[in-house]
Image 1 (cartoon, rainbow, N blue to C red):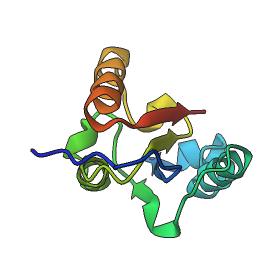
Image 2 (image 1 turned 30 degrees about the vertical axis):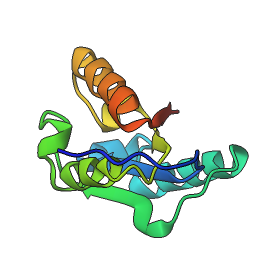
Image 3 (image 1 turned 60 degrees about the vertical axis):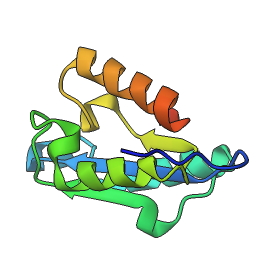
Length: 120
């Protein structure tokens, strides 16, 4: 895969939101809750986040590797364009189930794509 890097630093962000069950909604990690928190964070950090750059994954288990999920594949494709400098995920468990995998994906993402990971 060819990775394009932006010519100059940007403040463009992409966000990933996931909810797999009603129980998670009841526990406060609903799509609306994650969306609101991410948008508040974007304002606080003066980042740019377009509505089409908020990727929402509903009903998909965290046990499925991120890049194998429909929106996870789209996230990977968009990050590979080099157009984003920030990846925002409300909680690590929204993207990953296992900590070792989290560290590997975030590290590779930052080194290869030059993207900062913002995990709230």
